[in-house]
Length: 110
Image (cartoon, rainbow, N blue to C red; front, side):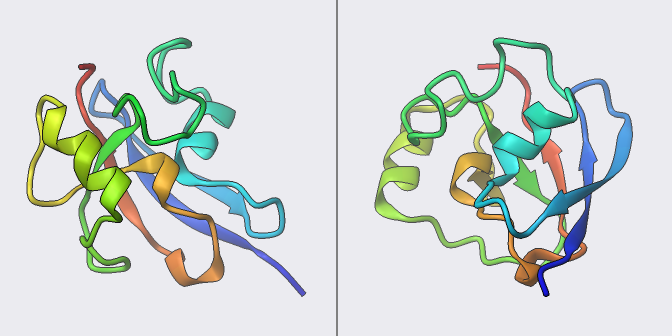
């Protein structure tokens, strides 16, 4: 039976939020951030999760997921601001039981 996973997300104001994300709704991290309104409306997920804007860039703070990026994600981050070695696009991180305990920080606006 699918279950929710717990994520720790630091918003752009530096506030830590511990949230529950459903594993049975085919969501990604960007959508969870929007669902919990952890970023101002219109500042995250601008492209709708197509890896075409980098507005959902986040920094992975633990080793729950890989820092490897798919080619679309790599290309978009190549053009983005505030990119670090641990940068990922939230829209490219699917919610699954494998990301239980993931800790991220939302990158500053582009």
